[in-house]
Length: 309
Image (cartoon, rainbow, N blue to C red; front, side, top):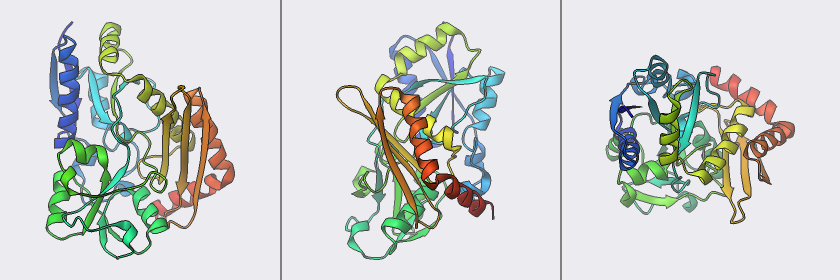
């Protein structure tokens, strides 16, 4: 089998993930070459994600290379993927999920969202900003774009007192010593896909290559969780700038339970529901329908109007 060309963004976190995939494939006897590609999300750092556009911010350029055959596969943080792929592209693997929680990161380990003490948190996530407004209205936020090292530098220089980040990235980059607080999943349900790495390819990629990559990289339990979560996001037509949240978890008997919802940009209104079952796609779609009927369609309309203004 010819060398697998693996496309990735160039940030340290993206490269960590790419080398993790490379090592996994090489242990299975494949030869892998990493190809670094700059994306729109990496190039435009002076605007929030919601102002750039929510679809393909971190994936569009990688997908163009998949179509042209310049790369065979692309790796993405699963939470950065748009909910719908073009017909000529597909996801063939999801790696085993890390701990899914958000974490408060600071050089001051005494900080806690639960303390009631006001301080400034840096985040570029509309979901996290809205949840802070809802659960911790004493917290002020400042928009924080850039890779993890850039954000840690801004934190150190005093732009903010703490950062809100996904545990997975903090762990992978070796910043665990600066975790001041692990945020409860009961309050901060994560973004869809948080904690897993997804592998994307063109539908036309050689079937033998696809099968081998999937065999080596895919984690079946995580895949079922993410199929449910992505079905939920797809039905809501949510993107990475929409404060939608969702988490599917697997019971010992294999049954999936998914908790998900939506929160208004001002943090005032939160809709949250839970669905259980064995069919991942059905679970996600059923949950989305519940949220829409509860008023999610109205909140989504208000959010889109708010982000475009």
